[in-house]
Length: 91
Image (tube, rainbow, N blue to C red; front, side, top):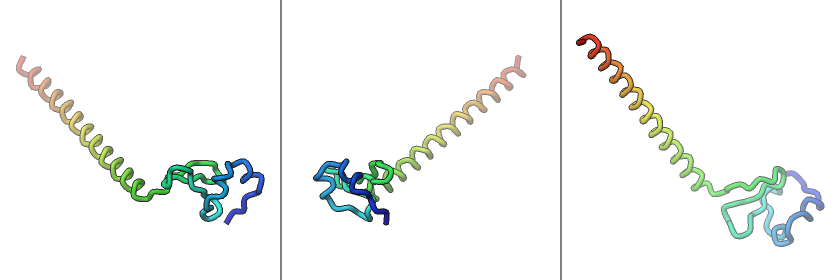
């Protein structure tokens, strides 16, 4: 556990300092129970695991749809090329 200097805690609003400190590194964000501030990096972190898993699943689905669309575009381009070759032989 990392110990924080009093000067670092003095920079924060009093109501935040009085909030419970989790593992000595995260403090909850006021008005949002799913967010916490990392005292070391000063980053705001989403601590809602279910929302994170849902976002990861949504990204995988978007990526899969994007891959499928790219495959379809490549297939259409290949068909166009083959059609042009066939029409070129007919002329």
